[in-house]
Length: 476
View 1: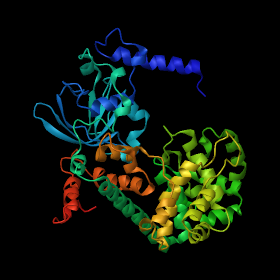
View 2: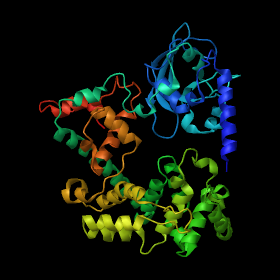
View 3: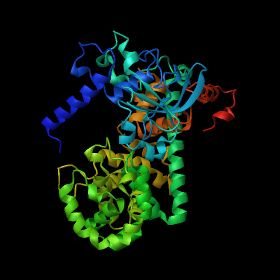
View 4: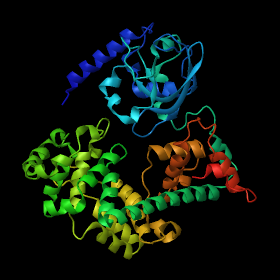
């Protein structure tokens, strides 16, 4: 573990390297004014902060047509950006990755990650000592252009304002909704939320026909436990270690099941903060290793940088092991809960999902209530709908569902769609929060025009007009 002294020395060295590379930096700037990548993201995104006179490392002038959409998921920092480069003003369209130093591209191993294959613009604070950038991309250093503005200060960048409230002008969809009543706005969000849950229920039905209901639930629950950074890896692990095989091999023992999941995940050699647990798991894993080592994942399949200890996949896999080996099987447990009615369903599912740390290490739960609520809404509710329960159309069920804590996408969509000063009540409730995510997925995530060509505003106008048909091009 890095001690406070070592950390201070390291920060001082990094800051010194950045400072020496910054051209004409004011001598009065203090250590507290040192930027982070988040600061540089805000400067790239906001035209009021972005300096003029940008040039590539090759000396070509740059005009920013669109900074792109601020990416709140794994992958590049911005997607769908557009710039004009050089005297001929050739247009370059692609994703944007932002680093303080160009060498971080290689250090973070982005070149090996397919999510970064579309990066065409590499924004850095200081110019690289040599051409270090993605293939086919241009590098745009910001230090020199920023230094020409004596009024600019990193300390003056309000990180909390981005990307939610820092827009040059209201989004077209916000303007289209200004004439809507609160009831109409809430119905819009609830309709979108119902569609999102319907799609999830349909996916569970389709997967159940192929692999069985219990395996389909296993894959959905493990993906939900993977959180936003590791959903894909967790789902892949659930497919490589099927539930029936896990239960049979572990003989219903949660410690053995955890050893299998940790070993097959490829994370056991790097067990993060759970070192003592890792030693015990190794003692069990060697017995199962021959069976699963051929289909095990690798460390490269997982994203661990920036993941809080409570969200580490090792901890979530321990919780998944406890949940998986309980009797009766998951589909039977949750089907019985559905039959008991709305409130009992919620109580039973949360009781099934909230799991204390089996090893008793660190005092934190292996799966706490907030993540259990997220799994309830995103997996258990669609499962109940796949059984024919009309949850989204039954007020009794909707009233019984607990409200989730808003995530980054929901906050962004609330500001974008409803404005900075919207009433918080408009977004409360599981169905409305699901609706914000569905609108983001159907429209914002697909838009590469920085709202200019988005069909959603026209859809909103047509949806409210009794004499207008819904635009076909805006069909979600």
